[in-house]
Image (tube, rainbow, N blue to C red; front, side, top):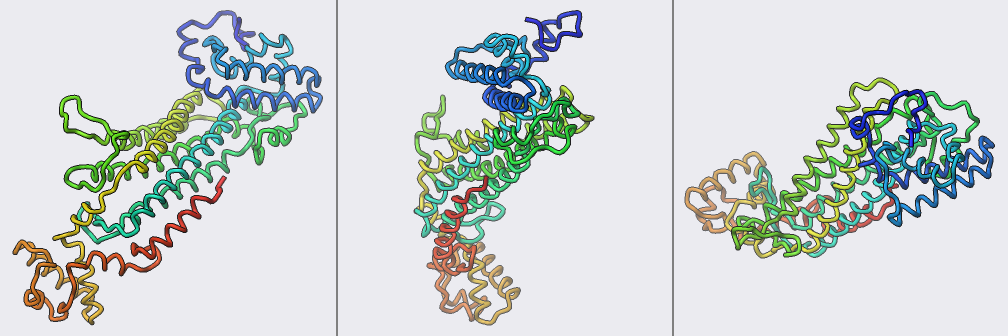
Length: 460
């Protein structure tokens, strides 16, 4: 079968060019969007009297039949037809005959491609938002189990101050909430109907764009036909939001990798989410977390690839824009898989409260609390900071922890340290942080309820 655009050509394109030019190998996943968009376009053509209503209905019935066949696995796409759009039109011609040629009235592949992409991105945002919400709930449920679990908090990967494990886990819930908000913002700018823009200048036919927008669930139509066919900002936004989400997942994955090590021992991975070594029989590797960490670089690469494609393009459509799809499809698939596997990782992992408690023994995580203790007894904070610094230096020299110091030793640094209860300071430390957003069990309990409300909000 000759190509649908071959009228002005006197030679067939070379096989190598066909292979190089074709996108059906990766854009076949748009078939449902393409058929749904074409059905809406056909209905509009019939409604507006641009083609006979009987022809419009025959086209609609034919497209529905093609969709059924694709779902049933009865369709093999043809690389000679270049892309999913031409493949569907070719299949429609085989099914309903010459009337199929009327479907492309008042439409170009340029605005057709833009429509399919927007429909695809909207659907992917909806799926991603749900997966993020599921991950948030898993973190919240795990936090509820560990409101009283005290662990070292870190800065510069060194013991800083005691925090509750629940507080630590909830930090990621709020990161994920911002991710949901970013995707929701992207959804709003994606929710624009480009169909009716034609190749670049609109169409001379009396189409009803608002009707098509209503049929396809778009909130508004594009304002400028040249912008509409060449705009891929919404894809860049999706890839950007996905990259930030990937960064958040990677940070948590890195902590799982660290906490799973023998040096930390804070978490024990379930056998269902760990792997072994082909050589070392003792190994239980956090491969899932490591892969999530690595795939974030893949997400970054996809974003940069599309930004590079777009940076020098003149208006309007250029074939370069075919390169928007593989980064988009790969990112959408990668993000969803990472979200789902991270949820499984969290739900099945056992956090070791006993090991976390032991990690606080003999260290200096309570140093800020000792300084606060002095401040409450009238010592200026800068002076208290210097006193505790000297105390820590002394402990390091003597090989002791602050809790092992005698009253006489403490008095060397300040007589106001008399009566301080250092051995119990970790529990008191987290209880003292009883301000909104703090790590005290009471505040964390309130935070959990706020996190549940945030996760339940419908953003799309």
